Length: 242
Ligand SMILES: [Zn+2]
Image (cartoon, rainbow, N blue to C red; front, side):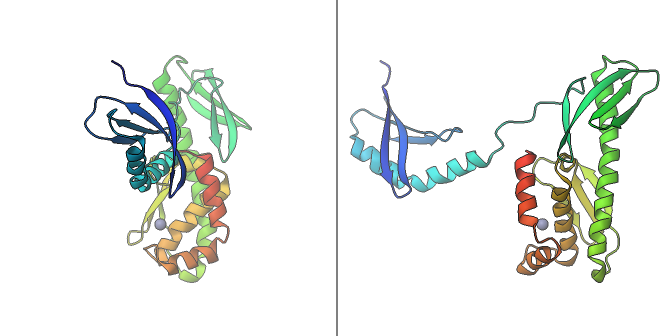
């Protein structure tokens, strides 16, 4: 015997909640929230709907939390870059198209919205990727350093030594800093975002040289140094998915 499946709604303290009820040979009422935020409930056929619904009401805080968690997760992991002709990457918020060129010498060169990767063996994906990431590191270093100089100037009254830049590819943060060692680590993927977004992250890290925590004073300083930080942060989070 297969269980039945029905869509229901119940009024909870969070509003109208839809759920899918499955009648199954189970012992208790079970509730789970799927990654698409739908709520699934399984219950034995003898349990009346009223009892199921009061169970759902008692779990509405959990449902809300789980749905928030699933909604905040990146929708889809990035597909792996192949470094093939025609593929597009983002650089400072604009599209750059990759072109692979068979050549006796190996280097990468950007011309407007195109990046030419010169490689001896066009079919060698690992080699293409290596050349691309070497180019990307150069660009990250150049642009991030430039931005760090601008921000450093804004902090002149604090007399901070110019920090050392480290690049990393991170999946959970945009940047970090080590105030006592004078190091700022930036996520390579920041380079995909518009420049003001990178400036916001760099300013945030510079503020940690003055206030290592996320105290009120820290945010007051950030607000003073970069009044539009909230906007830039929102743009960054919507344009680059880690
Ligand atoms: Zn911070």
